[in-house]
Image 1 (cartoon, rainbow, N blue to C red):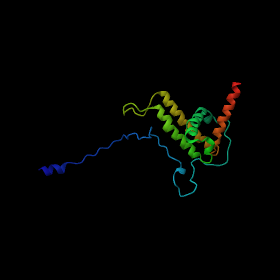
Image 2: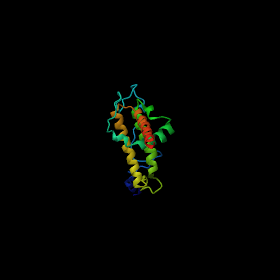
Image 3: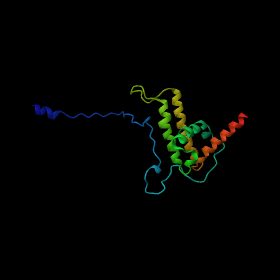
Image 4: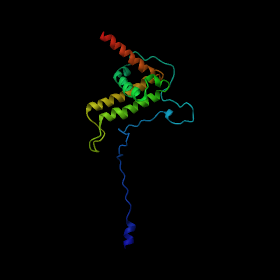
Length: 175
């Protein structure tokens, strides 16, 4: 009788939907590294942003001009401080610039704006509505950088030029 009872016992498996947050994971966004990060059979991997001759941005390029603050913060806090680079250093590899920008948003901006001290149920939520707006603005910034690179032939030096021109214009207005 005991043997019959033991043969009826089935193993029970537990499955969970919730995945614990790993050491470098802040949000549920997936960031894919450009093809240049992986060993490829071809010497030059195909870029998501086509690289061709430089084309001037349209006069109404308001999609990128509204992000001067984000351009400057990304340059100062990430590119120069951590990578010792400027925007022009990504000339010929615009996918790498977009990847580094997405990494900056995920690991620095989102991390500052989300709350990781509360209970598991609320972990990863934004601290305030203002923080949510900041992250959304940076996500729009990534889209606009990608659009700018698509329109101008993948040339990233334009961001350095835009920041220099704005600095000169601001100095002239102060005088």
